[in-house]
Length: 220
Image (cartoon, rainbow, N blue to C red; front, top):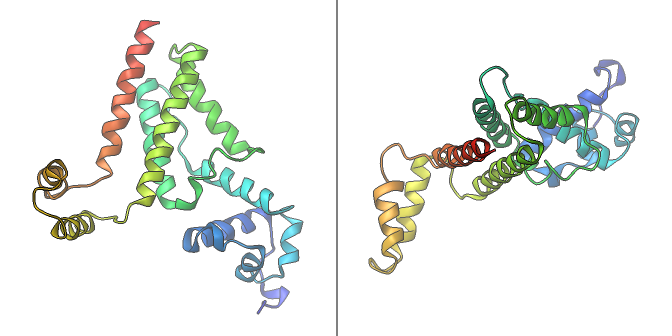
């Protein structure tokens, strides 16, 4: 049931996008319909079309809002620091908005925050001596890793170290003790160790890529 117009804050594109993001965060992208979004804002769905032209326009705005939350690469500390901080910020944002990972690079009408982000990343590389082609290679390698890790992390059936340990113990309790010795060793000596956090694998892999880019830059 919609509220009387006098009691509602003025509708705007920003309010529509903010409500859409909250809805997607709570219930997933499949739950994001114009009808449900209108109910959340206390208006008829048709009122939303004054601020978003259609569903694709809504998705374009949402992805631009996600990019706006990612910290731009900090300047003055070198390309490696800039890329590392950007990658860590991107992962944190994608963990907040798990629905966004499949859409981050799919939009054909990028908004200003999206373009500003891409330009800043390339600028941080170029300003520190990366040739254009190597900057393109670096960007592709980093984004493939960032998005790939986020997609894999989103699919995991656990979140905390305790949940990881409980799931590992359940799986191996149903298997012969010597059927998969290397998996058993990994689980026993790594996953089940106190303080294990799958997220730490992210920074390890990230540093490997940065090391490789460092060598590629030196070779130029």
